[in-house]
Length: 157
Image (cartoon, rainbow, N blue to C red; front, side):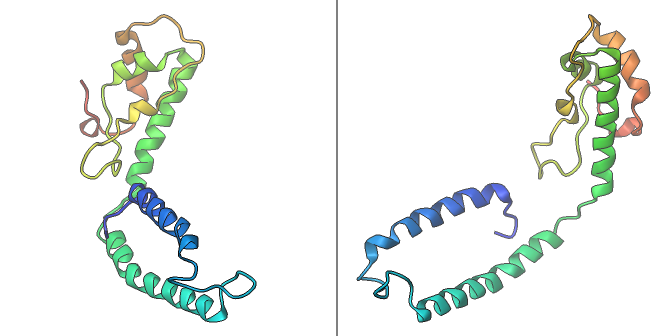
């Protein structure tokens, strides 16, 4: 569980919701509400203690998962800024996103999957709203000079 992500949380919350939805049917067997239909003070206290206990049990796992991931946000930010600069060039030269993606090949964004699938950064390109007719070679000639990342970090088709 220390490697859980937000994608594992949704099914877990769904299970919790289903279990909680079934609690009213247990009125009188597993727990007893007061005369006003609310939890008693002891039940509120027990719930608070349970929440605190669960937090203390899960905190080390969350901390271990966080510390086990060597995340360098500066490197990822450099890639995202590169993609943004190329997208601005696509818009200024009238290059649509499909032509730009074909011209540029693949750029793998760091920390976008563990270990796979890694996101192709060029999939984030929007391209021009009013594209001009252009070949892949023409787009490549316009876009390759814009790239700032070292060529060994970009994988071309």
